[in-house]
Length: 258
Image 1 (cartoon, helix red, strand yellow):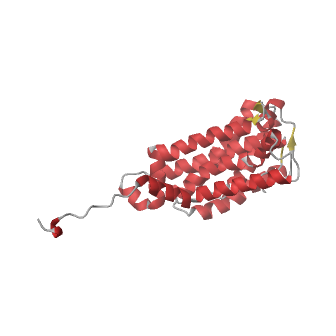
Image 2 (cartoon, one colour):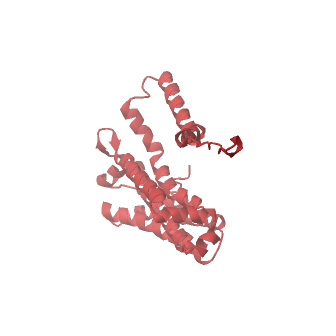
Image 3 (cartoon, one colour):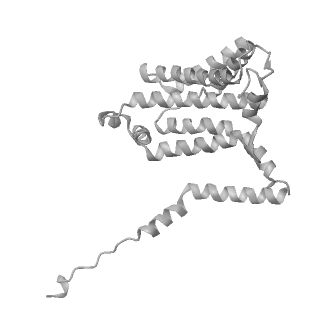
């Protein structure tokens, strides 16, 4: 046997080192490092920054928006968008305030808030999935429609006088510094993370976002999946409306405009 007949040994890549390099180059790590630096800077700027109650109060600034963002993320992955979520929150809050004038209690107010959110999401979904209209055009229009209805009902007035048990949904604490909103946010984050990464529905969402035509020929019911996503976005907007209205203690047509 000559030297040329000896096979050249193959180089087997180290999978672990490859994964480590990807992690080091990932944007998730970059965001984590930035967050740590911001925390360190704020800690040096104020001795009260790391106070548990201060951090707990700070969570109220993002929980309602984040709950809507969970459903919105799935919708964007699927290649659609919903710009009407703030209008949905305004209309759901207005419907709850209007029902309050007739003596509806906390369970009824919650049901109305979630129901209005679902109806608005269904309206957007039908226009996009059944009529084939672009979601960005549809939701720009419904954004003005939903908030316009709130202004028609309220004008420059406001609904007040929500019951104490309803207000607890936006201001109450479950245990120590853990507010109900924060706990709800964490539970929803776990649910949406599991749905997106560990279920067939989540894989369908990714497939539709990559190529809706190929997904349709693969047997995925594209319109049905998108309709569910619009319903979820409407539902999460309804949940945000309940929490935000309970936290503010009043309903105005300009709610969720910032």
